[in-house]
Amino acid sequence: MNITRPRTLVLAAIALTPLALQAQGLPPSLFLPELLLPRAEIKASTQTVTLNKASAPKDLTQVTYQFEGKTRTFSQFMSEAKVKSFMVLKDGQIVHEYHRFPNSRTTLHQSWSISKQVLSTMVGIALQEGAIKSIDDRMDAYEPRLAGNGFAGVTFKQALQMSSGVKYSEEADRYSLFFDVFRHRYRFGKAGSSLTDKTLAPTLAPAFAPGTAYQYVSINSEAIRMALEKAVGMPYLDYLSTRLWQPMGMPDEAKNLTDREQTAFTFCCLYATTTSYAMLGQLYAQGGSFNGRQILASDYVRKATTFAGDPSNWRAASVPRKDGSALRGWGYHWWPLEGEREDFVASGVFGQSIHVLPKQNTVIVRISSDHGNVEGSSYEAAILGRAIADHLDSPLMRGSP
Image 1 (cartoon, rainbow, N blue to C red):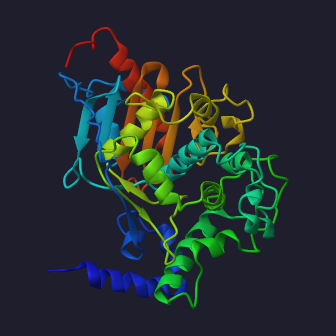
Image 2 (image 1 turned 120 degrees about the vertical axis):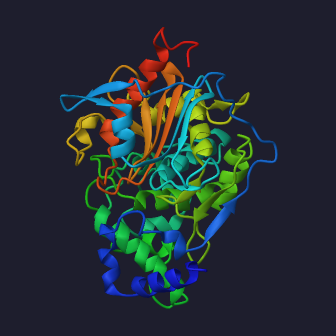
């Protein structure tokens, strides 16, 4: 029985009505934009790299950590955060791997906002290649159409640091973007808006001076993509494939959501395997080097992900969180964490994360369907990640299963 087409038609009908705006309350199991919009394929590398499994996988059930005054366990988190897949790398090897049925190593998982961290990587590569001369360049110098609204004069760095200053309500406007793009496709371009239309909208007026405050708005990522594409002279996904996926030897294909005009979403919606996300994390754990190649400049990695690398990155105190935590700051589209570890996180709503701890050469990938907590237990996940890294570094764990 083929239920995909009827389900798609029903969702399309909903998408064309004002009721669509109520979808921001839907759990991730029901909000599936890939049923309404096309996805472009990112082919696996022609020269693949395999992540080796440790000879003795590590048992993490003994990991405990303190959270909100209580002792918590790894098993509690895995259950309560509705974890679908979990992978831990230590020194570049897989030391722990879990997939909850029907998920497997080949499942393509929706990244949600982890896509922003991938976009940051591509900006870093463009800087390294000289396609973007300076991170302090105005984006409208590369894409003049961005001079027509609040993005006028905004630099790559300001947009990456979520300080563009454009007027935008993240929750309402982000969902409005989705459904305008849905309508644009199903009404053959005669209604709704493309991603380009949404990014160039006159309503994106200046709200504050660029660089003076932090405000998380996903439309910044689409403006960055537009300027990046002009800088490198090719569509975003072509650049991603030729400069990242192929050189890293990614063994799995991926997909990326696009609009009716085949423009790639970059504020969300990469679909990749747990292995692919882990390899991206390992690239950053190794300072931009992977499989013997310096794919991304180490200086960019440090500036993008740490407060020490760029003191203008937003400290956690300036980055308000619904969960009340004061741990995650904001860098170049990455989440640096407070403390001496200089660890950092890629994060997506509903519990997607890549926690990178370079000093301990540890990478932790979590894929969840945690719709009970919109922020996806991100604060607790960071505390757990540090506990896992410490557990793997303990003398009793070295060389033990």
